[in-house]
Length: 610
Figure 1 (tube, rainbow, N blue to C red):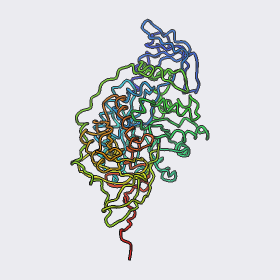
Figure 2: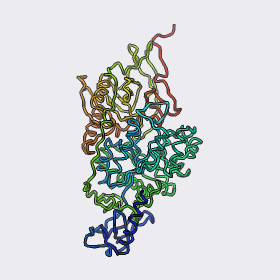
Figure 3: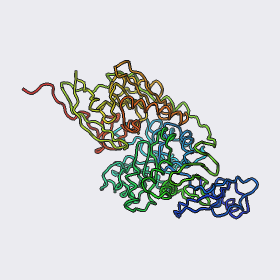
Figure 4: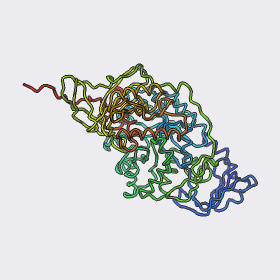
């Protein structure tokens, strides 16, 4: 379909380039950032017709007619519209439309989204909703069909399941560009029939298979994973990770999200070790609304990559052409060149990258940080709401970890790692009173619970977590819990934990902070972000959600948390495809072995031996 669109426009583009027909838009006197040649070419004119570049060269005056809009670039840089090669809209806590509204002013004109969050709640109908919403937007939003729903079969139960038949059906949809990140890397290595079928169907359709290899093991398992078909990977955290992926013919996707800061270490593969940058791609993976509103989107990633020592043009290549080529869309997006969609940015500084004007398909969509174009309205149906089902009201006793006849226990504890997705597998000695294991906030050990919320079973799985630093009676609960999206509750006080869980059931999903004051008064609600769509997204503007998220962040700080983007760390505590230790609805999971493990590793008896 995309090539047919170009074919219909080709005669008009030729006529404009030849001066036989006026252009719709001419931009004069810019410095052309040519991502093919790696040059910056001053004194360049651009002519646009039917939403595509018709002419890029020294003089477009022959393309100016009575109805042509003419803009003087005044020597500013002409940069291709930026591309996010791997991301999850749901992590912004807003819909596709509101996400686009937030990022277009930052120069993002193309996104490759993997809606596996909504898939885990609503299944294929949820993916179709986001696909259809994306198709109506004036920017390019391509959908990757979620490959692993649930992400780790046997270790968790999500709200839905995508079968190979579901994947094969979705691969035929017009806005689909490939298969989403293949998180079940043991399934690929073990030739799991479901994984093999999904990858094979994608390859047969001539589409791209996304990767997700989260293990630090770069031995046989990694080589087998590469042989299994995934074409890229964003889970590297070191320069060696990036090198290994590129050497195996994969694209190394370097991410800078709200909490995942993996560009600086991996880009050294280019800046220090001299690898060819053509197979490196920039992405965000997960950005919450506060980051989008205050810090930016792909413009933020490009600026950061430049600050790590990349040439500005090289960093821009990694956020434009490299991504387009990876997904087989080189003739459509990723460059300012004839025939491509007329997506571009005007900026006065190539390194600082202030985004001064944004054009998408030849239309001015944003100027000086403000959206100027219009976006269509998209309404989510009632079937996408009311998805938080607890089955009963929870009480403090639901969060008890029993240990009869013990004076203390050694417990396995999830250790949060700041600014990274992996966790540590810790062990801590915890006291026992009245047969119940106690938390130890003074040693930064509090409780984590997974509350089943898809089928209303009333199930609660309890464990322990360290790294949040909460130092007062409090609880944080969220129905955003990658990837199964049950409810995750972290707290130092079980009454607060119960109240937080019940509150999210009451509002239909979101994130809430409940806390008592330092003197131990009645717990109260400090912050609430309501996410009524699948318990994952709000249909309010990103600025509104960002303000709510700011109050959430401050509330977490008021409870003693000093982590950067602590909420993002909270949301990954159930992600059972990234080492080392996670919690699921089946129990505590050792992700280094892909197997359940006990919360209590040792019991210290209350009576000393005679």
